[in-house]
Image 1 (cartoon, rainbow, N blue to C red):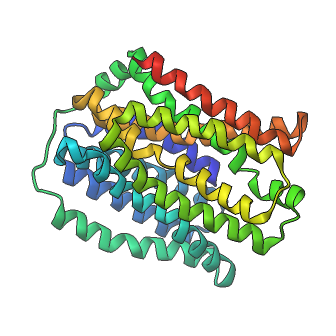
Image 2 (cartoon, rainbow, N blue to C red):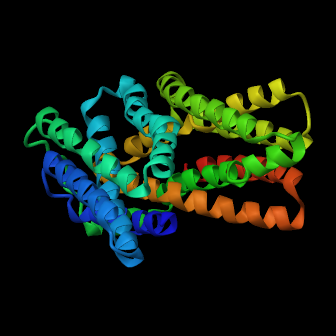
Length: 333
């Protein structure tokens, strides 16, 4: 289910953003959320696996329209000197969903049933539809984007190199994050309670990092912010290859890693918007696709590292790959 969703999002989001480029932004956001709500309801009512997988692909269509368009609208309506903080506020919601929404969904699924979890998602989408309709300015339009604009961005080597930062940076993070629980269990002797505590600390760090990234972007600019964050990951993640050490230090390392790991979003969004404001919806959609590609690639590389080196190889390899994302920043210039 997760693979179908991720691949559908990665492939369809840029195409759909380009296809709806001439529509009013409020209408696009409204219909994107509507599709997402309908997909959640279909998931809850699915009679079989085929329908369930189809509903997840449909959910990716709605989310793939919503996320990049929302970022483009916010970036365009906010003054440039506050763009980083404003984008961070938007993506604070996505980060908070990882900390609150994912555990709540898991609890509902296990305690009541997975259909009820999807049903709750469908119900929660309804007030969002109302808020979009009453809060997003009516008739809001930007420079229209089209499939030709998508092709233009794909052919723009510097822009695609800028987008590739997300894939490379997150690939490094997911090499370690995907296998963090078994790593801590094997090397630190952590049980379920300690692992859940570590994941909760990581989630809180991600929330702080998301807001911290907006402040860094407004103060130092996107390129310098992303370079500093990649350098911090290059230094921090190899420390997981030195386990075991005292638990309090492991928790502190996890918190610091999360803060600097999830500070990149606002800076990267602001960077792409500033490079080509007119085609920002397309580049932001490609950036969202790069998030999913990065997670998939990192998880795959992590599996190879486990097979060839072992658990203590995850951190060093992850640090090296994340450090390579600095090259994408230089080459994009």
